[in-house]
Image (cartoon, rainbow, N blue to C red; front, top):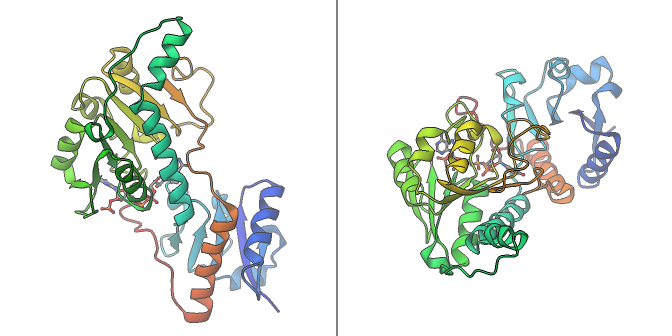
Length: 313
Ligand code: NAP
């Protein structure tokens, strides 16, 4: 008899099928079952669940749960609904980080080489050349030096940018000047030509990029948000964009997604709106991470590293 693992999600049927096929192909002896297909005995016996945007009521029907593997990297929506005794294991996929680093490089180059400016000039049939800045003379600061931030920082370094990084605890990353804490943030904001947000959304980071932080940035600085929408105070950013003090913002994540049709971001000539595409999950590589975690637990009794519930990430 295979070991039954509940799959608790609100995905489409096609997504459910794809995840089950990919994970089961890598985990002989384990069967993933949508919650509705589990008997009461199977629910009670479950120690591990795979979750993706689960309905909180569904989670409470698994009283013996020890840990839950999320299919997503961010856990801000999941953590408030997960009973405190259940460990949350988030998706930490090097492939996802590589995809994110590619996006950070692509959109940094977009801003670095003034593509929004030249696109606006073309619409006005305006032939005007602007001074080109060398990559080493462009300071790119990354807020969040986790799997996503550090991988992205290395990629930017390899492309010649002057890279700064900021995290909660002190960190050393070769080739990058690193900062932490409130004073570190002030120093980083004051130097950044391009600010990249790769922080998780927690109580400490919600609204971090508000009027005060934006006022500490260089006039004409540029912003990329690939973390979470609510890291930014939208009204404060829009005010700053309207004043020309933030030159351009590339936004991939928003407090409300999909971005509502009446959002001022859509038509703003100094904003690039992306529909949460900077680092899409790759089912094959993510399934391998899940399979490795399940194997380590069931074969070797090793719990994968869990989210720090107090820190919120
Ligand atoms: P991670 O490995 O947990 O790293 C988080 C980083 O943020 C760490 O460096 C951490 O500092 C820092 N941090 C957290 N709270 C902080 C605070 N209050 N002050 C300063 N630094 C703080 O997370 P990750 O895998 O890199 O992912 C980061 C976030 O990216 C995710 O939470 C998710 O929201 C987002 N994401 C977005 C997409 C997308 O498609 N747009 C895809 C994947 C992930 P320490 O190093 O000191 O712990």
